[in-house]
Length: 189
Image (cartoon, rainbow, N blue to C red):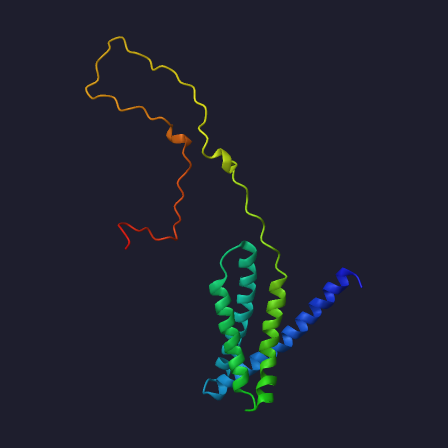
């Protein structure tokens, strides 16, 4: 079997399981909504909102991982919507261990698919190298010194000249301030 064929078979299996798990989950959320007083169309709206939100959050989680952005909130929301779907499926089941187990299969299958698909996300690219190697950051650049031009009429300064600075300010590394850290003023005891 070629790699292309294997990829196609995996995609068909993924779509089949996803479609069946989604259909069962949609039905359970719809039925639970209707059983608790919602009109039929709102039952379907609830099912669409819960199930598609979980799918969207899975895709968003993958996109954020690729971009190297934080995934905490999106991951938490994904778990919350998957648990909401799972709760609706278990609530519709026969009150027995097997009833709850069988009713939980669509949600668990969805979670397993999300985990498998997300684990195939490419690794993050390495961080870009700085423009200058770290060893050069503190070296003082060579500067040409020239005598200032003297005016024809020397006028004594009214204020004494400040002491010469030994290192030019351009040689110091840039100050880095992290915006997500609180600035503390005063003494902490």
